[in-house]
Image (tube, rainbow, N blue to C red):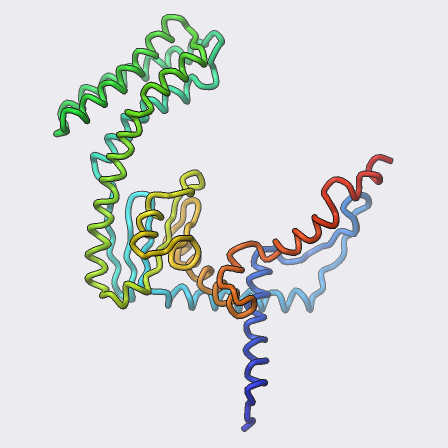
Length: 330
């Protein structure tokens, strides 16, 4: 039996990790099928190198297997969607909806203003066509019907009065626009800015309701997991592109887990994602953190483009739109 020295072991570990880095890098690019000889000019098709392709396939498969391992072993895990959270821990799977009826109702009232602006914002300072005026009339009727239904809710007087003021301002602008068959941008902006504080009070109340429910659930989960297991918790937030900055769920878990930035304990996944895709995302983050630590002594290095440093060097030496400008002007 061969005796492995410390140096040989280090080399073996380096080769194994290198294959994972190659897999991570190649996972970002399609398999090479053809190559082009020039960016501008004649295109020449070159057959792919079978040996390179074979190794690349193997490296990608190794990376995928490692990612699956990390996805299955990174527990406990909370996946936080737009309206519910799921706790996953070995054979435990618990789900809680954190959006209350009050949250939804307050949001719908705010949507009266949003719908009005979306309909008119790009049609200001010009005569409105008949279909737009009909849509306004329909919107007005729906808003008034909704306003009547609000009286059935058990809300405090200040909250209820605020909803009526928002709807009255919006309906008033609808009626003015229908009469004049046009609306100025200044008038539309003026109404939006007038009701903005009221809209944001609704937003504040809605998110307070959301976070209260989340905190109650996470507190119970922490008690069930215990302090030591809770310290190992990873959270993945699945949401859209626009609310990414200072996302309410990220803010909550940032304080709960005492983490300031995304990447290790808290992961943000843009767009819709099934649970399987969310788990793969976790596996990718954890695996890439280990690769970053092994090669760069920085667990966050693979959380930015591996090509970024090389791109910066190239663009410094070759500013865009200069190198080929003389050739294309001929």
